[in-house]
Length: 131
Picture 1 (tube, rainbow, N blue to C red):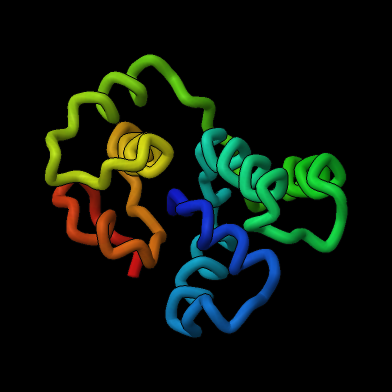
Picture 2 (cartoon, one colour; picture 1 turned 90 degrees about the horizontal axis):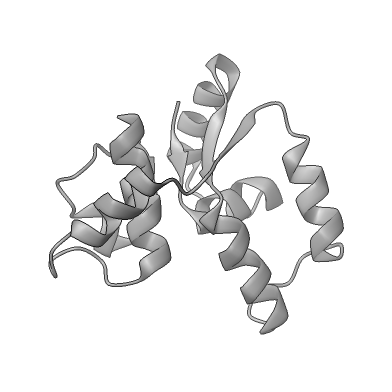
């Protein structure tokens, strides 16, 4: 199992070249063994990005979300009180974006590696990296 950062989910689903072949192999192998994990905060990030026209999807956001929620290889993790408390406890050395802190805390709480290309998250000692 791997916790996917928001951009990694988008790149994986859209089959973009932004996702390295190594990362794609790791994700595909993990997804064949157990569901990938997505923090529910990623839904907020993507919806906000669509509204602000920073993210473009091939279909309307609500249709996209319905399709993503049906994927058997993906499990949505709610933002729990435990995840929120850990995200809030990180010091200033951890990425300042609240959504990224929640994604990092989700991986930490679940004890799972994080799939991200965000250098600010990749340097955190809180979790292992998927690649």
